[in-house]
Image 1 (tube, rainbow, N blue to C red):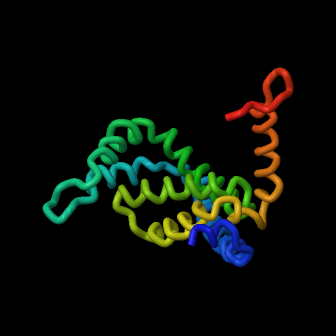
Image 2: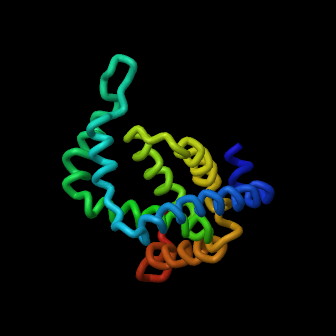
Length: 174
């Protein structure tokens, strides 16, 4: 399956549709947070997740470290995390739609999806995770019909130029 996702032209077209659809969802949500009539503030969401943590069948808190992170780090820094959420959602969406830095965008989309799931928000997150995993596993093929067609080779050449040659002009051996 992963071989097909990474190499098939058919897969690249299917991934294009999935990528643009998922990117649109992220971009619209981020855009609403960026331009809404009230400034976006994630502290209410964090307070709700702390007050009502995800519990197991015995009533025990399932994601204790995540809840501690929310309570002791994210909530006191809610302004910074609100900034990260609204811009993160918008930029992830833009990256997926344009197919530029697609794997990075899919990774950060998955990271945000899991943060919402750890907080107990189901919504469309399971579907978004499924599509995000397909895009992430596909790697370059997911952004082949987008900006990655030009950006990824340029990044590879640039990085190779920085690290691939020694002072004498010969390539470094690994």
